[in-house]
Amino acid sequence: MSKYLFKVKLTPDGLKGLLSEGGSARREVVGRMVEGLGGRVETMYWAFGDDDVYLTAELPGNTSAAAMSMVVSAAGGVRTNTVVLLSADEVDEAIRQKVQYRAPGA
Image (cartoon, rainbow, N blue to C red):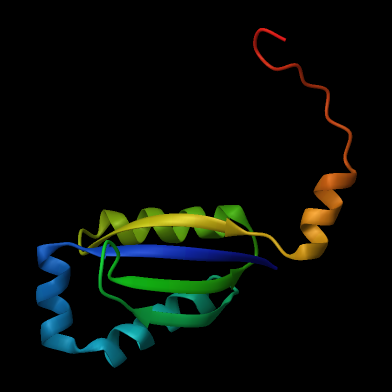
């Protein structure tokens, strides 16, 4: 399974919903959604700053992550930014691949 970091910003409507339902209820909704896609939530933290929530999850692949992000964002309560996370083994595999490239002007 692939790992993802979802950085979430609440919209005003999303904040109203959070104030009404609470963080634990939203965590349960997110957990069911991720499990329904064949994945699992690793962590979900509320935060101060540019983002309101940081969620790490395992999902079957990029299409599941994209589907989740699109549906959640289309609902209007949040805006998401998805980051694909790589393990050390995946980075090592990437390093071993031969890539043909020439920098501009080189």
